[in-house]
Amino acid sequence: MDRCGTRLEGHLRDRRPPRPRRPGVPARRPAGHGSVARGRSGRTPPPLARPAIACALLAAVAAVLGNLMIQTYLAPFLDETAGVSPSGLGGLLVLTGAAGIAGGRLSGSLVDRVGPLRAFAIASAAFVAAMAGLALAWSLRPAHLLLVVPLLLVWSAAAWAVPPPVQARVLALAGAETGPQVLALSSSAVYVGASLGAGLGGWLLGTLGPGSLPPAAAACALGALGLFGLAGRGARKPVPEKGLGAARNRDANV
Image 1 (tube, rainbow, N blue to C red):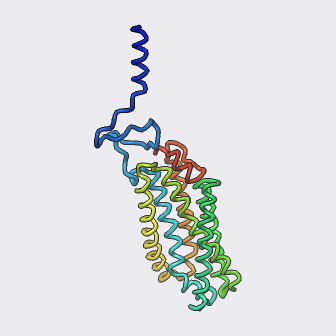
Image 2: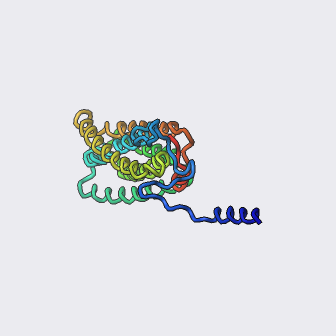
């Protein structure tokens, strides 16, 4: 009888509802769930203190810097390259805007299929190819619009294809705890790159002329690709390479 009572008591103890948490005490999470590397103090280091995230954000700065060199001073470049008038420039901007939207959507699909690094590499390669074509058009000036317009469409699509892989990479590196912070930093990196691109592009335009803009923009894209590759090497665990959903589910320790 005593033995049966003991078994019944143990069974009831196992089915007892969990104790309510005290106010201010965080719930325990299973080990390894959404975890990121912590310092000796037990606190998660700030995003910019983690080399992999810093490299990814610097890659975004460099990519936007190169893009804004061309975008800010597109009017004088096209005027001297192909004799594009202000009214004609308006129509070209509409076309390049549509190409940019298409490039962003395609890039998101590429991130899901091949991962952030390959998607970023494809965008960078397309951007560099477009810059090489624009440099060729400058050397052949006055160039025909049939040569210049396709290059502008590739340039815009490639430029707008950069944000999706950058956001997927930094989210995968940061994890759930600092994800909102790195997304805010990603937006800030865009503005920093835009400011630097406009400033450096204006200096190049005034000193070396419009023909110097495409080679300089291509150099920025190659530098951005190198930094983005370093962001992957800086991870202690492999960064998820199968899209943003996998990045959220399997956070990398960096």
